[in-house]
Each structure stands twice: as structure tokens, then as C-alpha cells.
Image 1 (cartoon, rainbow, N blue to C red):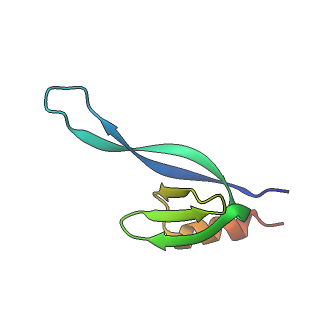
Image 2: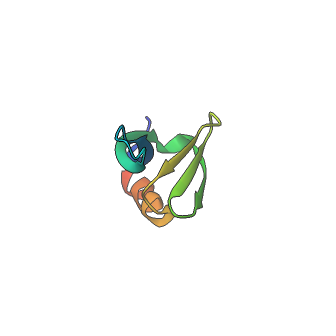
Length: 73
């Protein structure tokens, strides 16, 4: 059975105003913990998935590990 984690993905959005600014929004995503290959840290955490996809999330590596261990039976 898959172990899904609810994380907050960082998404850059561009404002439509005349200044043309952008900002980061957080979007809830559900990630299958069994498909995470590596977690690297910077300002945010980057998850390298088995599919090759890379996700940038707000949660720190320690928080993600705690979520994984808490979701295991």
C-alpha cells in the first residue's frame, strides 16, 4: 500500500499588474513516500522522485523523514 504525504509545493506565479512582479505560492500536493529517491536542502527542500521528476517543497528534510516514519504501519 502506498504511503502518501501531504507536502507544500513551491510555485512561482507572475502578477498581471504593470510592475510584472512574481511571488511564491504554496500548493498542497500528495507524494508517494515510497517513490522519493533523494532529499536535498537549500532554501526549500528538493525531492528527486523515482520518475525523474524533481519537486521543490517547503518542508525541511527532517520534517519529511518524520512524516514518512509516522505514516508507516
